[in-house]
Image (cartoon, rainbow over all chains, first blue to last red; front, side, top):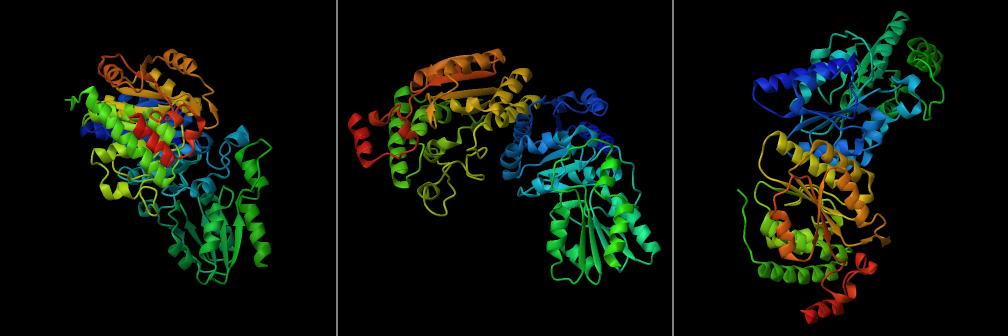
Length: 307
Length: 259
């Protein structure tokens, strides 16, 4: 689980700081974290803040803490972390380039049965619009743990989107993760798949299916949407007949990939959420299937395109 | 230890006259708006920066539209240098109508209302949890108490009993297009109900201002400072126009004559 991976890593950071007599890292939550943050609250009450149901203030306070030299993790459900206090995120944190880590839960369709108010399908485009903000979109709990290590001394604002209860993909490339660098998960020379977030799991399954047909598929994971690793995508796309983007958001990944390979002679196929509100409830798998984002549906579509 | 300059009230008044004149000229030359709000909060800024605050203290200008008043104080204190100050209103200046990020002496760039109290609360909370000395002062406009985020911060400070935070409301009774819609009485009630100590002062009387800052308090403290928009030039005082129109040459002369 990504949430638990985050909470566990943060607890380790705080424990270690206490051993070293430092008092730098804070967690401020918007009244969320039941069954996840109790150990932090109990062991580090001086570094835990429940901001309550007042997200604008939560972001402003986190900026103040950072101005006073603290490393701050802010936690909430993505719409209440990024949309409700958008101007505080923009002005107080990003404009001042402060080391505040915005940790959002419920990426993509993770809260599929909670309705559009809780579904941040456009989060990547919204976050991408703000200067200075590094955007992390990990695919599984192990990646979250890796990012937490990298974030310990990261000096800039970060938005990291977590989904919910995903198991590890076990792609074996965790130690190569570096903020701002695309991660090659598979080699291949005919088709390039670029994925982000939990869609990497579907991307890997899709690559297997296409490989069985002699497709030879390379998979690049974009775990850092911004800064975007343009050179890696340009070079991976060279010589490919087809470039496929897969994301659980409304096209931010596609926009970046498509704009980076305009000079390359290959088709680009976009798999994303539509630019619309979700008016139905159901499981995430149900909605992903409805939007054509399962490996099977994407496979069918690709077969049509390359036929 | 607080670095008390112990200027006399007369010296502060002289400084007030000097910086008022300076601001009238700056606004006249640059044609930047908000002279009225600068003149309503100037005496509070002078008292804080020349008498009250020491090295351990921090100041947040939440009402960012009074940037020029703060620049004039920071310039007088030699925190903003002559070249930078002279560039005000000119192309390429680092001094904005609202404070820009990175300007000397500016804790946080404001201008959008309702941000400063939360940021100041975060700085103060950090100080308290680290057992560091010093207080955090934040200057709010009365109009900005309508912002939901100000009320969120007010409650956060009350709930967490952040005693090192002192908020001052520049109660000049005007907002951008009306008399202040959420009146002073309501502001006092709200903050008191949220657990703040609320006191009132004449925001243009240095003895009154300094007395309240020096008094021991159980904080968090809200100081409602009764002020006058455009204070110092009769034709500008308590008039909505002085929120927008820079002073004319005649009004600068009027100020000289009133002295």
